[in-house]
Length: 245
Image 1 (spheres, rainbow, N blue to C red):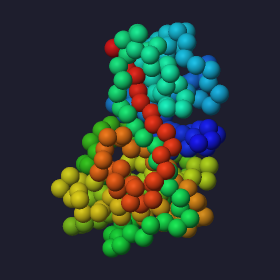
Image 2 (cartoon, helix red, strand yellow):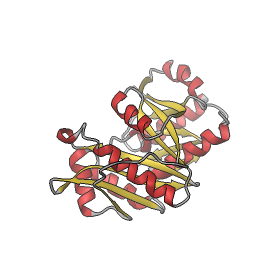
Image 3 (cartoon, rainbow, N blue to C red):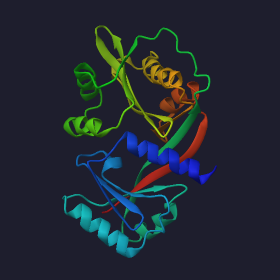
Image 4 (cartoon, rainbow, N blue to C red):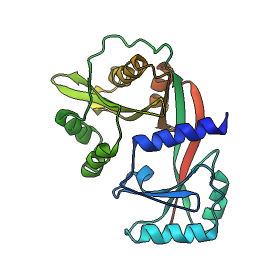
């Protein structure tokens, strides 16, 4: 696949989940927000990066040490993956394998029986549901949402009077980026996540957006099957993290 398309998709995904701090040096971006979410607490290659040398690793370790965190380096299959051996020699360990998928929105898949609602901004009930379903760094997550540039929409599927499944989508560079898909454990297997994501796809298609991307844990077979059924049949690239010991 054309590398420009891969970079465009990757940078759109970063814009849909911005970091509080984005310090750039030597063709890399050191993202930091605190908490446990890896994508906003890791070093990421930038378009045109020239490799990962020892000086960059030293600077990265010093940067994250200043926040009391180990260094975490994100490497993509088309950019930086060859650096994993170099990091391994310094004791870094691999984790967090993730796959980036794309869908054509020219004719989005119909989603029957949808109980999904869309909000332009994160409704308090949506935030409360997200914090209940995906309990990780609620304050950091709320701050991150405020940093996202519009247009964006927040989808929630209401069952038994509460939001049981949710997701949000951001339009970046004429692409819809789908993020934070989550469903209450006891309500899984009912097609609720399909409704949440489907509502975002149809909203974007109505805005003449013809492409969507998302990132999913590589070995999460149920999630990948869901996204495949919604048209995410194009595999763009994989990525993984290397963690400082």
